Length: 290
Picture 1: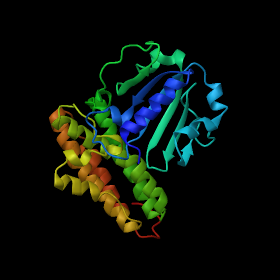
Picture 2 (picture 1 turned 180 degrees about the vertical axis):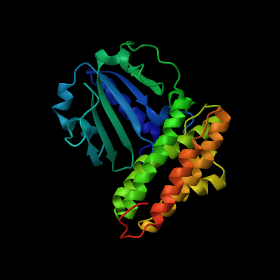
Picture 3 (picture 1 turned 120 degrees about the vertical axis):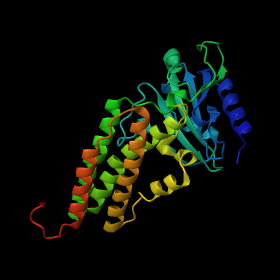
């Protein structure tokens, strides 16, 4: 596996030799001093270029970076509509285990680009044309203190969509129930846990994408509670996960509400919890809910 130094040297030397490339930047986790370093970190590289067409029309140019296991070019995909505007990206996983996410950016977008993300380091600026870039910080990703309206919306969404999970379970629609549990209810639980961590750390850190650093900031008991919200492939397992999720959400939300002087919707919680327990006990051939 090529070392970090070898990767940077190769990328920068390649850019130096190509007149179309006027600047090179690094983004993402490798710029973040708060992220643990490991061998799976991507090299999030951007080339600021004088023109794009000669690169895009000659896709073989990226072969110079090494033998690949797989390539993805999102801007050429039909399934996922492009959202980078005039930019073009190559996501490359190499046979030595390294990965480069390389984005071409028109040089005329340099001022806008350099303001988009505070996790940015300039590796090469041939013309000294880029605006001054401050030292990288992940402060844009720190947990944000919620307003009471945002807190109330989170509680409402959690309890409202929980009823969809119950409906899907009674109907024996396991995939529907799992989808609503994980796609809608769980993000509200994560949001509440995120706020709890924010309170305990003065809203001065990030819990990472998909809450991947949550374990560091939760007690062992709370972490085990969170793990118990992940269902297996059975109806009983999803019911148990939904119940565990409700208990954990309640405990966490009440604590958040007390610290931030918000009102927790106890009545919504009580009524919906009773409804969920009622639906769980309904007979399969029931004709009425009540």
